Length: 377
Length: 101
Image (cartoon, rainbow over the protein chains, first blue to last red):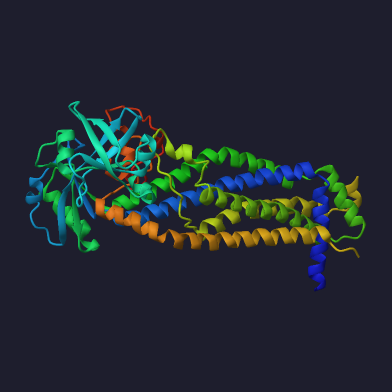
């Protein structure tokens, strides 16, 4: 081994012994430091994974959804709007969608009732999301009773439970036939919740949307790009909000770490004096202190990140669940797919490891260039 | 000269942590591959049912279908209706407010 490397090893050894002389203080610092990195990394990993997954899944959502607005609010859209919009070049398919919300007083949860385009259940049957099945404690063949808009009781046999793996999009879904949906919500024939358009070329979306607004001025076309942007913005915003909430804790840590790293105690000054009197060079003292900063911050970064990875991807971010859940009774059980942004991790590394290491070196350099006799006094 | 035992132990710990860090990247890639069929099923569900939103926030209609919510999302129910759902309070303001004029 080269002598330079051996020298660094001995310096590191000395640094560790020096840290071990104040075990409570340094372990406490390491613990708080790790916790801060853990929180920041957890938020970063979780929001990035969710954002990536949302964008990957919603790539398949309809290219254009047309809503009718009445007095600025979403209203049912007449089926003749499909004829009214006429033939628009580039539109492959257009059809009406039927969906709505239902508040179930039995479990105090909101369901989304929807009519599938293909393979509709029989009139007295429904297919339900896995989360509803778990919350209501029902299985295949069981009966669910719901009260309709005009207070008539409807009994449905559960003919299918949607794939548990698709809970992220189907947790609160109830699929039923068109006739039953119209009867249940008292929606007459000829009205839909909204219209969906399939478009051949995504570059034509804007032009088609502009044509739609001209042809149907009381409607609002929602493009798939806007849906994707909404989800992108939401998770960035949520990450930002959590960071703002954590700013107080982070600042408190910065002050604590800065004070610990940059303020030299009398004991430390004396130590430097003794080292210099024993023949240590200024550069050696600085190297030794550099190791001290590096040991604490590197270890805190690695441990914090590893804990955050385990928290987000092995416990499905159990600590964040109450925040995401809000007041919702139905919350999908899902394990985020680990999409990792290396740039984010590198940013976290730079902002956590570098400042602390630099903060330890500067005061030492000041003490180390002064006369040992003066420092020890 | 005695062996720098503490330094060796620390370097070993650091190497172990770095190895675990690299293992997370490998693990993430593996889990992404393993989740590919599930992702395909999710995409198929979205395509067949023409879904537009995630069922993450089912507490209110405008948080359940975020992309379908009315334009004035902050006060959906009536003028001056205070936002009372935790999810709603975490929604970003409309992008036109933050875009340069």
